[in-house]
Length: 115
Image 1 (spheres, rainbow, N blue to C red):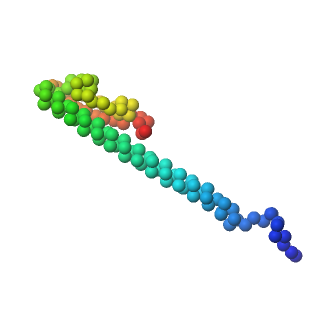
Image 2: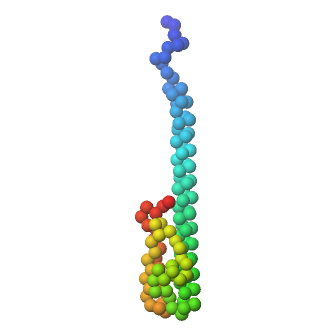
């Protein structure tokens, strides 16, 4: 019995795998690239939050040093001390306790706030 070398009915399973390797490699590279971008984005957001916290503390202390009282509101800090931040990304809860007691400040990342 002779074999027909042009017979397409029998495809070697190894040859199918060879055709899938580039596709699997591309998918793996895409996943690694996406995770890398996501990691950089998370790091950037963390740095922005840290920077906002430092700027807010600096402004609060500067206000106390210059005026002799802590700022009465977050709006006051924005208007008089030039605090600017991404309000779509962060929520700042500013709770003044008294004119001579450091206010309670909480910075939260808003829902869906990862850029």
